[in-house]
Amino acid sequence: MASRASTATLAADGAGASPKGEVPAVARAARLLATLADAPAPLSLTDLAARLGLPRSSVHGLCATLVHAGLARRFADGSYHLGPRVMDLARAFLARTDLTAEFARVLDATHPLPEESMVLSVLDGADIVYVGCRRGTRPFGFDLRIGMRLPANCAASGKALLATLPAERIAAMARAGGFYGLTARSVTRLSALRAELARVRERGYALDDEETRQGIVCFGAPVFGASGSEAVAAVGVSMPKAALDAAQKARATAAVRAVAAALSARIGAGAAAATPFTSTATPRGTRSGRATR
Image (cartoon, rainbow, N blue to C red; front, side, top):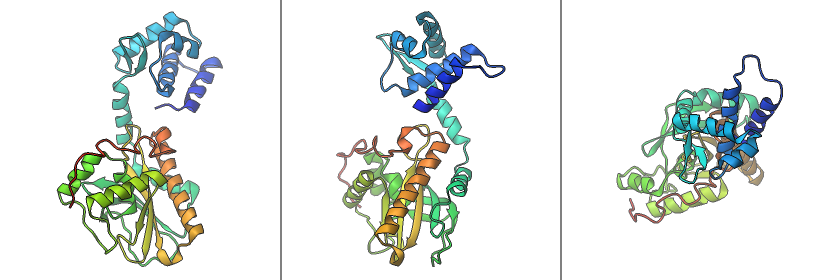
């Protein structure tokens, strides 16, 4: 979806010199869609005309065309917002975006924590799978590799992903026996995991404190796409616990969140990329289900 910056850019483009070959009607429709995307609530024709600086009759024609195409929706009171076809386009964009290539581009552009190892993970059932990996310069003693699979309830990137899911889905994973431990510190009981995921949402990052391997600490943050509040991937950084102090923890958590936000922006996320848990602080169904493993 368009950001406020993109709306301003589109408006400026419309007000200034047009690119060669630009179709004015298409440019106005793009500005209208960007305006609807930025609005927290549906807008009336009068509001749209004022924001776009266009005659009400022109805006009415644009809206009618966009409604017919499924790109806008008209409500009973005559107001408008984005239509369902926009989500289809967003999903198609995300499906054609190579997450791993974009992850590598972000790391190449920002060079975060070069001494530490960073991974990109996706959720597969109740596990996470590494689909991207950059080994750090610091001796690590743990072989991180693409294709590695870990229980999501233990790994930092897994908990970052789980924290964006509805509670009923997490409960279903627990009932299916999907959560298991790797060390004595692993969180496997559903009640304890729920509490841990609440802390993830509160602080904005996930922590694996020797839950996947003794002596190793990891931090994770979610990566969002354009089609919703559930994360499509997560970024994680791992380091020896012996090397961790308050300053290094602050650097690591800031870096993993920055990389996740930059990657989210590259694959089409909106404001959720900057404040990932504002819309998922209390996932649907938090009070439902009492299952424990």
